Image (cartoon, rainbow, N blue to C red; front, side):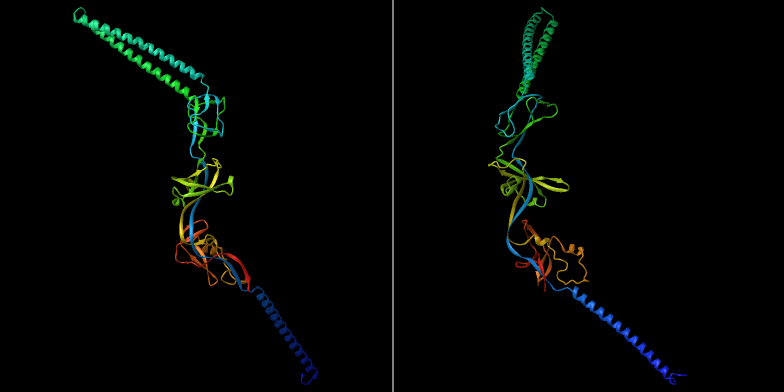
Length: 416
């Protein structure tokens, strides 16, 4: 039996075909719907993450020419122009101290006295020794005169053949021995005189006097202190000459020392007088370097007028030395050398853009690199620099000219 002869079978086959076709149409519709959905989601994501054009507002500086005052900065400490350490050359007990710290003193003024009891005794002994030596000299001189007279008498008798030659020889020997005793006595007298001079000198050194006019900075002794000067001279007082004239010793960096010369003007500040500048003048630059932690500096001395007595020894000061002037110099702010545009500037960045690497930024950042704004886009320029005054740096190369706009920062972004 076939479907052609059996109408019921034909109807069943048609129904099956309809079901198959409906299932295929349903699957085709589901696939199309998923494709439409994926496309819609993709469109939304692209719209959401697609970068909008960004306009950067740059901070710029217009390159100009102006006079530049060149300076060099250094720090140091104030010191008296002349500082004297007063010590003791003898040992002994300090009986009295006549000055204190900050006292004004004059040259020759007595600062302290030792107890002189032993020194007085030593002087008396030396005086007695000198008296003994002179008495011995007087005695030996008389002996010599007696020997000379005996020699003359003996010589006369020998010439008259009344005495033998041996008697004359003995008289001559006695006279020579007497001469030797006189010479020895004279040396003893000189020795005794030297002993007296030494005793008197030690007695004079028992009084400590000031060698200068000035002020007492430090006193290291008190009455009753025992001073021992056996191996080295102990420092009893630290004196400073007139504090109306002082010195500022600063450590100058080796990069700036070539520009510093004696006679240059300088100013400095101290913490004790905030907001006030003091004038100074470069006196000299030491040739011998100071090396500390592999840093080389040169001591530079500045003379300071302290007639108002506002400054004190030891104060820490920051000095600015005016080393020269550059007229009509093409200059750029030092901030321009420290600025590097963000890596994204000059292009749009999207979701899949390559992030800027730190290595790229480091390669762009250079001590002689600045960025010029050309056609509203940053352009990197390598320049040759000259002197700097701390705020501006001189441009020596021809890559830039007056009027160029130099990038020094970013003010902000705006979306167009």
